[in-house]
View 1 (cartoon, rainbow, N blue to C red):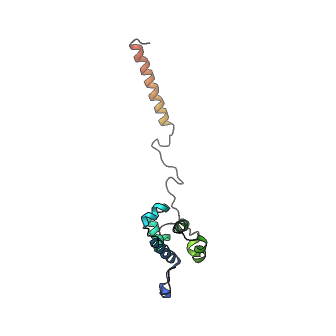
View 2: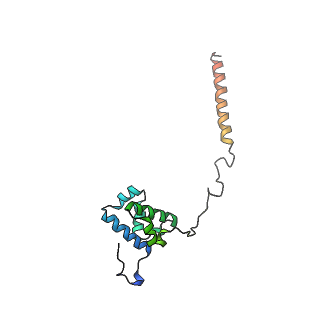
Length: 146
């Protein structure tokens, strides 16, 4: 366990920073680098580093952050229930009200090259194929095959 008693109260690390320090210490004890952890957990090394620095919530939403932290904890061999009891604010997902930006493709119809006429390309293909068949018929008739 990492000791934090040397900090002044104003400098006291947050739960995220404490859990990150705990994870970093465990990873270093296991003699693993972030790339090896990335390959084993399928969590990008940048996110693993953010977890260890206690700044994962700055990069992704709370639900994903908690999921990544739990997955990383299991990979490092921590007992998840005891971590949740020790760090409840860091490991319980909460709705932070992230805003979504709705734009083209989500709520509005995108314009198409046909100007909204979806049957026009099919009509052009049908006319082209019919023209080729008619030309082939007259060509075959002209050379005496038919």
